[in-house]
Image 1 (cartoon, each protein chain N blue to C red):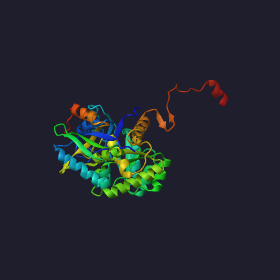
Image 2: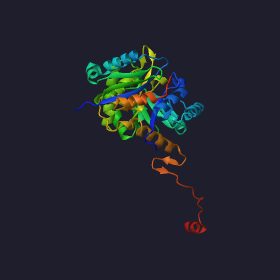
Image 3: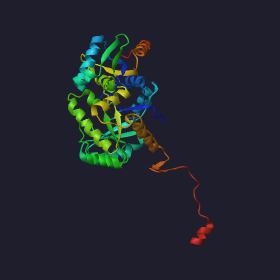
Length: 253
Length: 110
């Protein structure tokens, strides 16, 4: 695992409401020292797009991580989606649209990260406790501070979310959330923004852009392997079919 | 405590180019908006050099306010209504070294 690699997991291309292409992002991200990048794809994995993204990202020496953002309001739909597509993508991020969806995303082990955007309910203490128990990762985006009209409210919200999450020991992933190539920032600069604006002393601030996202990526990749059965159980080899000896059959009769 | 100086070498990614004065005004405005006049006064912020051709500049500040200046640069998202991205390339402790690094850079990201 390359622990010096910086990761940006939330970038919006023209296909997901952004204004720049994957190529433009990749060229700039490679200059800034990022190693892994993921583009947002809403509600349905598009394998052709994933291939296209991977190709354009690898041209600049970056590694692509496939990601799907699931806007959850109905739990049954979310469950059917997770059942169908879990093995097709590297990361599944839930954007809860109501409190039930938020609680569901904190409990379900097929969900990798939870992201609270402007349409999501508030990130409260109960949510934090649930996420902490189930080892869920919380994603925060720098773009919300960067482009908002009301920066005061956004800083206030960020401070509250960070304080609660860190208080419960939740792992945090910091992403750019860039909709355009001009909203991408250098990793160290992003951390400086979070540190200075929130005013919270974070022990190992680089974890948010390096260790935590890499942890999510590698855990998810491990889960997608054929040998994986469930956490703690994996197939290590295949034996010959077992044949019952005649002696034993006679004994059983 | 002795206030040591730090020199931030930064670059601007933007579709248009800017003069040194425009960049200085943008940085000062953002610092005042985000951290206030006290921070602006105590940080010792000063734009030492800016190369319009390369879009590379050097900012001086005190080491205690390095994170604030980094954050200020990151928070600037437009100059004269044109979208920009400012990013720190390197931080040095001497002006001489900062100038030599800035002069040796050949990048111009548009």
